[in-house]
Length: 223
Image 1 (cartoon, rainbow, N blue to C red):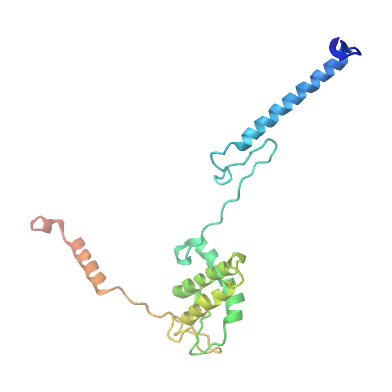
Image 2 (image 1 turned 90 degrees about the horizontal axis):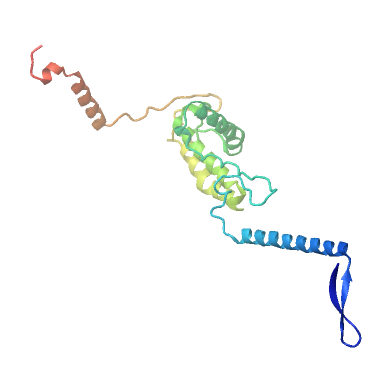
């Protein structure tokens, strides 16, 4: 049984006696407080230490604290590519999505009337230059309708992209000028593209002559 001093009348100290059970309970409580204080100190040190790298930015599961679920950030979407750089099924899927936007939104809203000054082609997908122009216009549309573009995003798209693209695609001398100019008479014709330059033709002819030369001629032997 533990004893502790107690003051008596007259200035003398008299020990205070505690039961052994109470003493053990107090010692257990003190040990718990010390253990909890040490755990809190370790947690504070862990929080104060600067991490070597943010696991979220490195694409690794995040487990900063025990019991927290692992965090893996979603993979970023693929960067958009010009449609003429795509091939095979990827090209067909992108062209199908572009066709939906052109038919259901672009021409439905901004198509205007078909005239000689503003031709159109029901088979515009076969005009690769038109496909490239409309795809670029569609990509710009997606960018400028995003909330991050701000309230003026769609105005910028109308002013800097829509007007310029439609003036080129549907211009009187544009890529569709040989196609439909009368709404009652659908027509489609691909304009003849410029051929290779004279320099390229000469270089190709020279390479062909070199290829046709006989190895016996090269070493000066008669056939």
